[in-house]
Amino acid sequence: MKKLCAWLLLILLAMPCAARAAETFSTLNLVGLNDFVAANKGKIVVVNFFATWCPPCRMEIPDLVAVRKEAAARDVVVIGLSVDEEPSLLPPFLKKLKVDYPVFLAGEDLIQAFNISSIPHNVFYGPTGKVMLAGSGLMDKNTLLEIFGTLTGKK
Image 1 (cartoon, helix red, strand yellow):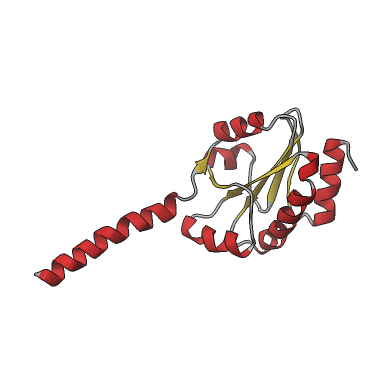
Image 2: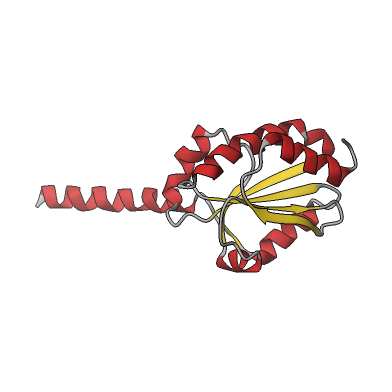
C-alpha cells in the first residue's frame, strides 16, 4: 500500500511539471498579434512562422537572431510563432538556436489569417503597423537586412 501511495504521489507531482512545460509558451491569436504590433508602432515588426521539424526554419532562425541584434538600432522587433503541435519540443530547440526574441504558439486564426501553407513564413509590418511584405521561403541574413533597410529607410 505504501508503494502504491508513493507512486500516486509521484504521478501527481509530475503532472503539474508536465503541464507547466506545455504552458511555457502561450498561444498568440490575431487580436494578440494586432495588440503586439500596435504596441510596437514606429518599429519594424517581423513575424516568423516556423516549426522545430522544418529544415529551412532551422537555417533561417540563426539569421533572424543575428540580424535582430544588428538591426536593433533600426527599431526592428522579431517575434516567433511556432506551428508545432508538441510545445515540449520548443525549449531545447530554442536554446540550441539561441533564440532571444519572444516565441509563442501560433493560434489557428493566425494560421488562417495569413494563409500559412508552408514555412518558414515571414510577415513584415512597417512602422505604421501595416503589413508591408509577407511570404514563405527561406530568407538569408543579407535579404533580411536589405528588407529592414528598405522598410526603415536606413540602408
